[in-house]
Length: 161
Image (tube, rainbow, N blue to C red):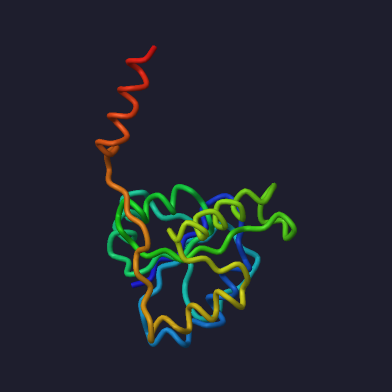
């Protein structure tokens, strides 16, 4: 199952349109899609505007792949749950956000090799088409708790004060 989430506040029609156009290549894979109010009329799957938190977590846990905007909450959840994630950042020039902080987030995590990023609709479509040949793998994982190294470092810093 693939879980797509765009958040609940701002439509992200570019992402949804690109997925809609390539969905026939998915070979019948179940697709759960949460979108904010959208002006784009999806043809190949059903969307949901709001998914209650418990159900959202269930979909997230069951998913073989997360596709998302470059929201930090979704990215960190993918790290914690060790899920492969493919993000496409919202861009201010299309009115998808107030500024390009999602582009900055996606670019930096991409440079670190932590996430799979599609910067354009065409790049997203190509990555999605290739999933049957090469499934995406989680690129980065974090635990629910701070590492011993971080805790020791913070303790050392505090003890200097």
